[in-house]
Image (cartoon, rainbow, N blue to C red; front, side, top):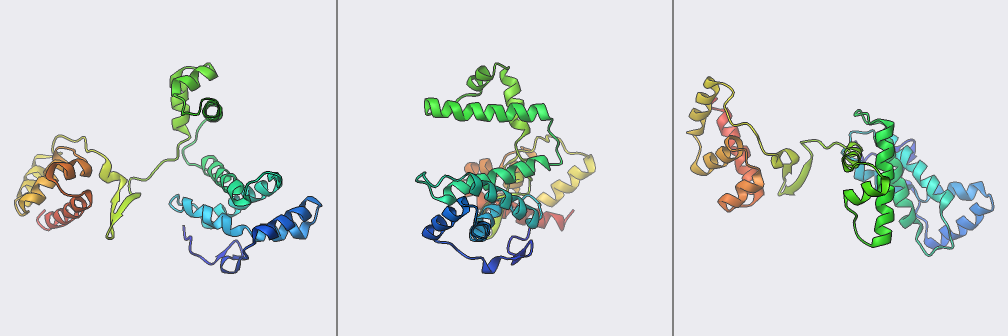
Length: 257
């Protein structure tokens, strides 16, 4: 998603106005009196809020124009439901509304389809969770939520798992001097055998060309299925260093395979 584009949905984002809190309160008074021009000015003055929110979703592969339009729907809903009498800044109220609207859009348009009944169970479980947090001032267990819903604990687990957004194995989770560590670097490799005898011979020959440290890292990573964090702890260096050495060693091995 090209989040840095200047024009989104025909709107020049570099020239969006910024409203002061006092100006927003004045416009809200006019909005409640049915002034459509004031409503339009208020929307335009808060589009930067939508832009700031959609940056959180820039790794989902969605077109920025689509997310911007959905975010604007959340902004309009926030304007329609905001209560001036409450001592809350509009942005504090609007951001969760915008995020919620975008998340609903992403769930409904997810290529992994989730049944309506499963989604309903998940949403009910989330509502019960919020109620129990407000009541007990602590995070409830899955068993407590299941008891309130009068359904088996397993159904709650399946439902909540079903509405979680999938994550790419290539999504970066850490950066160190330009070297990214990806989700896949945190996943253990369950393979314990070479796929073929010939591949095993080629790998052993290539490994002989590496330094002792590089050999150790590749052995722990790909023959014993350790994660980079586990390797780093064992040999006493940082995970970022393990990542760099691993990439360098693999690059050298490719020359000899």
